Image 1 (spheres, rainbow, N blue to C red):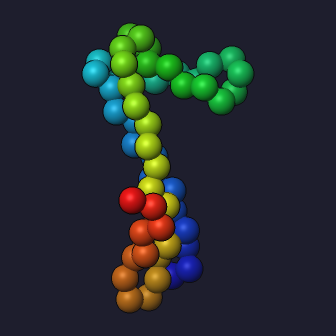
Image 2: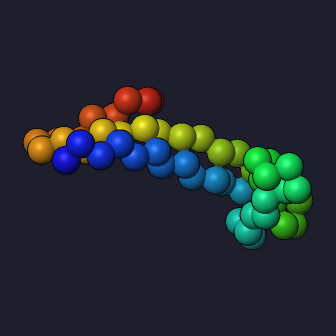
Image 3: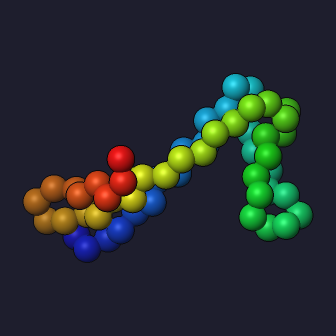
Length: 54
């Protein structure tokens, strides 16, 4: 209860393995295939989760 989570799936058209680039922020698939990342933020409450993003 009272926890806020960020769920950040990373979808790829390849094998799905990623590496962090030297800038410390950017990610790239190892096989350089197309990828997309999105995020959902969720608050955990006593009764039910509250999804802040859709």
